[in-house]
Length: 238
Image 1 (cartoon, rainbow, N blue to C red):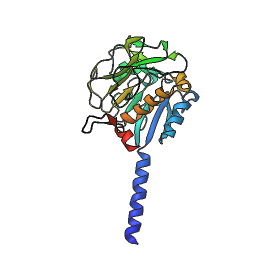
Image 2: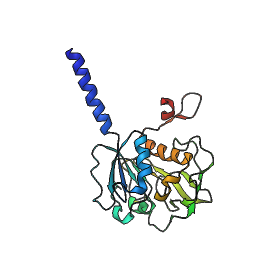
Image 3: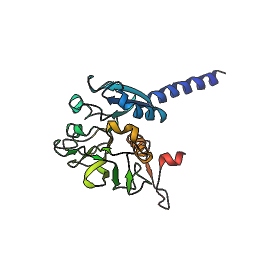
Image 4: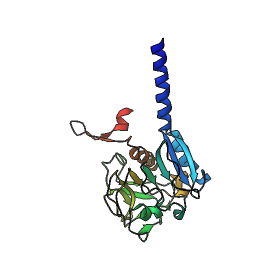
């Protein structure tokens, strides 16, 4: 009985630890802002707890127990600047105008927020983009696409605007990747989603968002078993 009790106690401790490790810090214009409700609900549907913080708080916030920081475009860039530049927690970022503060670009002269709805997938063998068509519609109606043409360092470009391949829409900086000003301490995924578009994302677009979250957290890994059959860790779990 004593051994059985010990097992139950250890399982309870492990479960509590696992739950704490699944916390996502969401940074937006509110805590949370109504405009960010679709991404909040999607993260919860994925099984994460969401701790929302407004952009006018002191940043970086306490990241104890967090597995990811998700920065919505609803933020005002001057409120965040480079607060998460040296973050040891993975970051998914939709706020283009802090790319220079994060060290991903030398300045903000190459940032773009033109209206559009279609991306070109330029790296189709990456776990985030695997299985998607060469061109995909990401919004049900044309809304702002957050992109940039002046990113530097050791980035992996996954997607661009379909009508302008110089404008990067999805990029990845792996942990330890060289940036314009230094190197990352955790994986960073930069995304195109404008906050006014959350309710208009297509099925393919939500796939990109979910996979970006999982990949940044290290839960979506490329696997190439013998025979070179491309797949992903998450798919193998299903």
